[in-house]
Image (cartoon, rainbow, N blue to C red; front, side, top):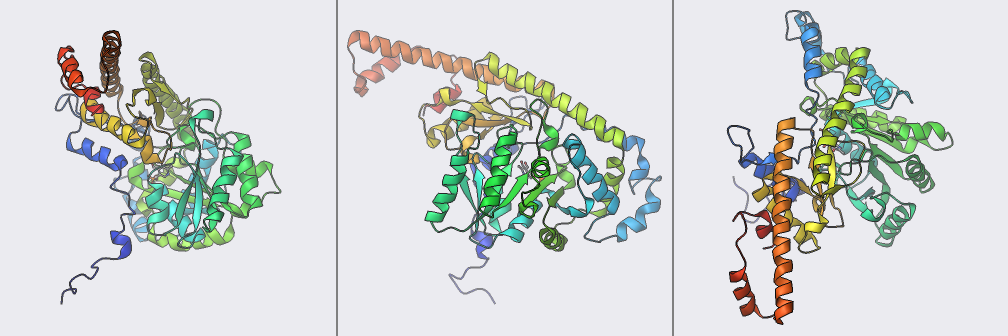
Length: 483
Ligand SMILES: Cc1ncc(COP(=O)(O)O)c(C=O)c1O
């Protein structure tokens, strides 16, 4: 028996587009997938700079695994544990694993704060953690306020299946996208005027896409604001271990510690091993909630979201190695800083400015000067030229809900030094071509002014275009960018 004509075959969630796959953020990934750069096999291909992956320190866990074959059940040294690991399925997780994760969280925060392993709930990456928290804290239609620009996949992770909503808190470049008390208040006021129930605030600290950390006073403001209005505060601290420069990272857990009057029941931290340790494929995420009911509920829900015991077993051994973890964090930060200096320094030499960042796996690049039109459409035109002609998959600010056109997130930790140099060379060529076009346009304007020609005469413009010397390359990204 089939379905009657016109009847919806799939559910509303399956067909509502809430996954967000059709955004420019994911389109850029597709452009890369269809034509991936390879230094010898496809040197003209697209370089993937839209993926916040940390591939700079993979040699360190790899080396550790060579030295510790007993940590894996897939080696002669570790296979004796096979039965125990294969059978374990308690959704609390292996105690040594939760203990190791709690220690890692402490180390990522400079040892300034302690974490209780019994408050750690496992999930399939931070992706699963966000959704679980949305299910625990929000009913369909309830909203969380989120400072823009924000990580695009929050729309999927936090909203798609839970049907919670995200409402933007406006931040802009006038103060380096810093969250202000008035922006927070007006986002809440707007929601109340629109009759939208607000359940909390969701922040990412360090920020994806900005690559900056929140200062103490902003975090204090947030804690005070959420406490005053009885709102939850979710802090996604997935990039805590990627801070490579001063100022040092400050976690909401440290703010709680110094404000004993604040209600911890409203505070929840999300993290994962995807960024610090560069293990997104392991799918290890976690919720650390100060609220007992949330811990208990999230743990029940984690049945849908568990980390395999084999992975827990391996990581428990690695994270128990204090020297390895401390050295890793230090060396990884050093390598990230070095890469940031190489890439952002290279951009600076061709006059491209980035927001000053101190963490993350990316920079927030200002290409406002290259826009032909100050609008989202103008930004997307420029982005299409960068992806298809310059062959770099960067992510446009609009995909992060940035309200100011011209900003792009560029990931720099998912490639080697040589590929970074190729990317910088392509950007240099792009800027050179742009300045050629700019100069030609200025010359054209001067000529028209001197000869009294009017811009509004298309016939004359055609004649002028015919008189203009050809660009050095017919593939100039800027030619396409202007069309
Ligand atoms: C802010 C933020 N939260 C969550 C995630 C998802 O991470 P995971 O791979 O652990 O699911 C990402 C991944 O880029 C992220 O940037």
